[in-house]
Image 1 (spheres, rainbow, N blue to C red):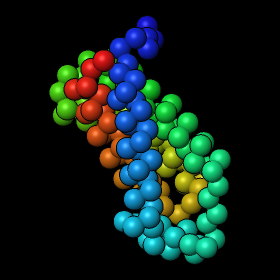
Image 2: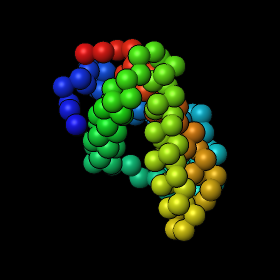
Image 3: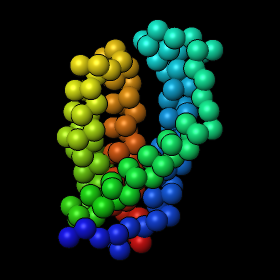
Length: 135
């Protein structure tokens, strides 16, 4: 049965902030130049708008709510248990789906590796947080 009752909404909000903050750092100072080189663009070619950040925040919110539900459903009680649940959920669902997209019509595989590594960290860490930070 699907239930939102066990979700720690403060942890979900923290997850949205963490996900977006890590994305900012990941695609900025850490790997921004690498990512731009892989996708064949220059920094001035990327035109971010406020609506793009809004859509990203909503997508992160949906991800965090679902991840909190999955971690709760699997009964993860420790940070490591939650980390494993989050990582397995991403690898089994997110990584495979985005890799299929990349294979047929998406960006170069190197860009997928950057995305997958970033998402694996977010899902793993937040899965761990959801496991130990109960409502």
